[in-house]
Structure formats: C-alpha cells, structure tokens
Image 1: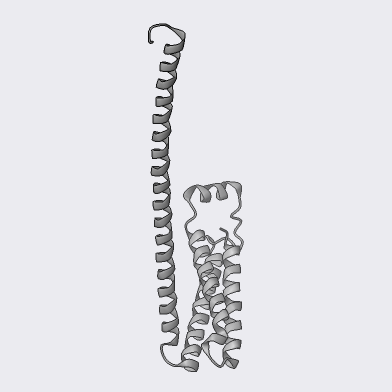
Image 2: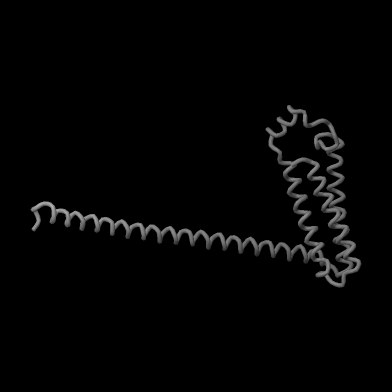
Length: 181
C-alpha cells in the first residue's frame, strides 16, 4: 500500500465528513444523516486499514524499493521529512474533522450522541461477529454430520458388497464345481 492510497483515503474521509456536516445543518433527526455517518465510518476504517498497510511493509519490501530506486525523495515517500510531515498533517486534519463533527452532533442532538452512536456501532459489530461465528459453527457441525452420514453409508455399501461377493462365491462354487451339492 503506497502513501498515495493513504492520502486518497484521507481525502475520501474528509469529503464524507464535509457531506455529513452539510446534512447535519438541515437534518431533523439522526436518521436523516445515518447514511452520511455510515460513509464516515466506512472511510475511517479504510483510512485505518491503509495506514496500517503503509506502516506494516515488510523489510524485504523496503529493501526492494530502495534497490529499485522507488524511493526518490518525493513527498509521497514517507521516509522523507516532507512525506512524514504530510502524512502527520493529514492524520491531524482527519482527527480534527472527526472531533468537529462529534461536537456538532452533540450540540445538535444532545450530549453523548456521538458516544452513543459509537457504542451502538460496536454492539452491532459484536452481534454481527457473533452471528457469523454461530453460522460458521453451524456449518462445521453440518459438514461433520454429513461426513459421519457418508462414512456410515460407505460402511453399509461395503457390507453389502462383501455379502454379494460371498453370495456370488457360493453360487459359483455350487454351479461350477461339484464340491457343494
């Protein structure tokens, strides 16, 4: 993940925050700005994901970049002072915009509105993860049950095959050789 992508994530988050602030001025209730808040949280998670990806580049990636000359000292290179400064300023602007939106929401709809929204989102995410874990567990149980059923069917087919083989051998022995009569 390159710093340009991270900058684009910050830009998308900034646009989402601006749109939410504009909608906040005319909104009658929180449901009117729900979509804007969703866009903010999605872009904020994208920013965090891209930031983590930029920070977690492996040593090998850094060595390859330096050997190929991709780190040319431009402002997109986070190892330069200008690049590091730009990244920090973008982060600070993003945090300031989120805090400004938090204050505006709290002023418009009452204290703790932002905190309540964040708490509800955490609860919803936890419930979703719990449902997904339960669905995964149910799928694993279903697969295990199907495996046991197939194993038992295989055993039954094996027993029938052995019985058919024994019956065929007895029939062959009775009709072909005079030993059994």
